[in-house]
Length: 362
Image 1: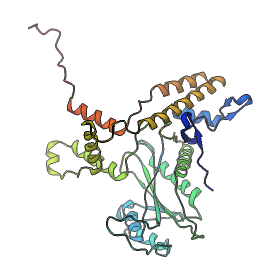
Image 2: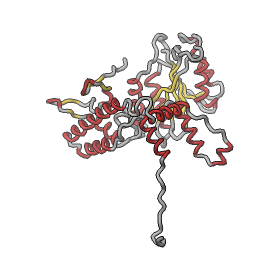
Image 3: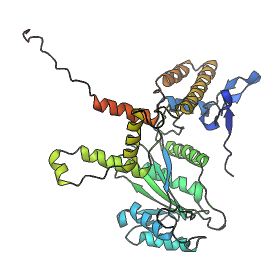
Image 4: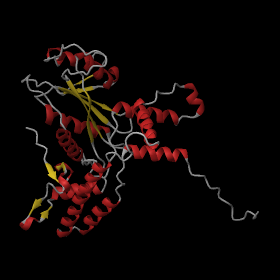
């Protein structure tokens, strides 16, 4: 049974996820004095020491066998990469995706033959699979990412949900694409549901598995680290990356290539921000108060952590915690961030020419 998400009351009646409280897992001694255990101290050390963070995310999921087949072919690079299955074997080739779809009997799942909605209508069909990505920062040995992913798959899905995975090393950060069948293998009415607390638990688990591989890894909510910017969805991220790569080419190379299409999502956000700058629409700081409330709660929890560490004789770590908090960037909405970047682009600083000390005065 998944753990229930707890909420903590805050000043003014606001509530916040318990997972954002750094000290939530510490023990209270006599008189309510907080005492951190060794595991909590190690977590604090990793966080304030800026240990690389793992990434576990759901990138989508097919609602019919054709979509699942296409995704498996994509992650397998149309037969060029081997696919690790839940049976401990590797399959490769142009027919590998077809073999998996047939072996998993996706066409026999409940609701598999519901018609696809018309254009513009919401797709309410149940997913047949979840597409999950397990990733580590650049420089991580790819073979260790795959080894940790294999253990992750066994511990979470073995003898319950069919799954397969592929390691990708074509980008700076090694990552594993994990495809998991939603329907339980022996209890068809039982399905795999992925909630926010599920992802949080998986991140912590994957970080621990990476540490078992000898790789420094951490898993903390971005708010705890002082990050306020929401991560972009994969298609938007890929489009922006393609645009950046194209703009970094020299002029002749750009002339020989076709420019990638701009991101309509980012274009819309920029236009909305410009409209706000003109005084129309919602203010640039719309939603900032809620973000600031979260930051205030996180800051208070870090303060309580520093106090507990000092009581336990961890003065150096307590001081490191306080430096970590002081270095957090100010809370900023996406609209404010875009507006400031646009203003910088419109009014770039004038370059100053250095004058030789031997140059004559004019």
